[in-house]
Length: 387
Image (tube, rainbow, N blue to C red; front, side, top):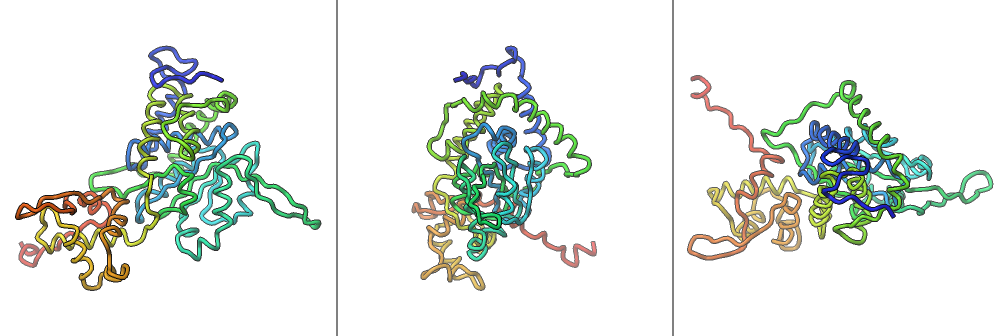
């Protein structure tokens, strides 16, 4: 088995102090993605870069990680990220709506394409849609592992034929995908751009040639390393299915050398830990932010609010849906689940009178309010307008 480069060792063929072609092209791809998309974290940027590179070496992998690009609302950059990914992956097969039959007939064992789906929430976002697309979900689950074909009868003799399903896939949409897909995915949780965050406009005619040049360099670097990659067993910071999903990305990083082995393992640990135990519900996330801001304003914008007080105010707010959110209205647990996607969690706070209780600090919400429900700019009054 080939020995693996350490995080500090130069990649094979590189001289000490010099970056390999692999490290250079990965670094350039990361910069190109960052130019067009505001990523939620440096770890997520690392993960997308390595996932794109891994599509060029699919024959070497035992598992084909999915890339789940999800966000709690519109305009979070999901489709823009998919645009950049589409122009840099191996053999993109992109669709916004496709049947399972069309997909598995497009996959070959020797050189599988990279399957890309935008607006995946239209396929799985409701119970009716999910039921209608159960075959597609099964195909995406089976295709995560090699040698999991789907069996169909074809021709006038109704001959059983095994169709391959193994192929890497990226899916973008609002809200979480089905749990079985999320469990097989590198999950990128996009956020809406905050005031002050900016990216370059993406223009297909102008910007795709540079992306295609990076795509060709990735292929030229990685294809000769297929046999080597197939034999590699890297040290993984996670276990079980998470290790299966992340292993191709870590191998790519080890092949590139330089800073990439350390970056890959850091991203793997952080992003896997973040996904552990997440709730799949995605409804009413933006509404809860706006209503909580209203509660804080009504209370005089204190530094923190007791969870019990916040719950009472939400359940009694006129025309708000929270009183119907269960037999007794919204509960502290349910509130915590709705806010978890934004990284907002309750903590212990000291309140007037010296009492200590669970609650939420106002500062916890500022970033999410700015991104997903910015306060309307007040119109000037008549006197100001005249002046």
